[in-house]
Image: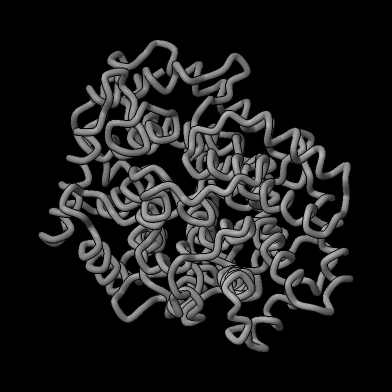
Length: 517
């Protein structure tokens, strides 16, 4: 995430090529984001309501005959939506009319194709379960692969168990439910609030337990807990927040944009307080499951800020990431033994380049794993962003830290990524999430960071011009969201647009030549 150092960057670009308002716009965005840093150092923003969770909640309230006021507010939220996503359109029809509609041809296949291949059976089962809530049982036998627990972290285990119960009930196959499924479901209800801050899994668990006799009190209490998270617009979100993810990335962005050290150390203080016992970080301070994505960004921020002061914390974070490394040299998101992912491998490798000599073998094998997963067009398999440029910019940063000494396969990987970025610029100067899609600020920010890894300033000038046009009067940034979860379903935490735009402008600032005062 951090900008390239002068030794790894190319020749500085002349400042006069770029918009005259670049410095003032960057300063306004920096001030806006600094204003989001709380007294405890966290950058907080709630996840916005989503159609999926709101429909699941409404269906649950209808089945349990509970909370008429909560139901009315959910209906009001759903009626106010103007969906662009095909799944949201069909969900609204199901939720508001209970119409006997089957999944449109190709819908499930398109959703599955937008997620990593190793999650395909689980994604298919989840969509089948949504339709099963409205009386549409799957047309084929249940796929055992959808319920395989191998290599699953705790969130996936809970969702798999819940979806399995819903589908087993819908198909008359209650014999498929075992004691481990029930234990997994009940373990998520051992606390009074939303388990792991994940509203979607909470709702799936309640749907499953509602179908198992003897759990009426647990379901009743869980419904009350869910409604405590109903938002002002009447809907429910995917998760409550992603505050550690926001804070870590904001730290790197603010550091790249020369924010005051006292603010940066306040951010660091919050992140230090959230390190888990395994040395890693989760996405929020209300969850325990750690991941290499958050951990890698925290490590980069702390190292850039003060590697000596935060040295032991950084080393514990590194060990937590190395503990999940796979034999193929790649890294999964959560736990050892899960499938390696190119984007997560790039995230870890880029963090390890801070001590490249110490980790040279791990870095080399990580690059090999990434190269195997790269497509011929330069992109990588779907990760945790609906923008294909998210994985690309993180991989480019990793491969261009020391460009002169990279082996041929890494140079080829870099060349393909840069070609993808350069070929994807729209006529307005921005980039869309996928080829041919309208430009948005977040995808353009990812592209601008990528462009700072190559020589030609012209596309970066157009990108910066587009990005500044997305700035509001208050300094913040307007953008379509690219955050996804569960993959490939999009959710929105607005402050992330501000964070990644500032990160891109920080990278650009580091690449531009400045005249001596």
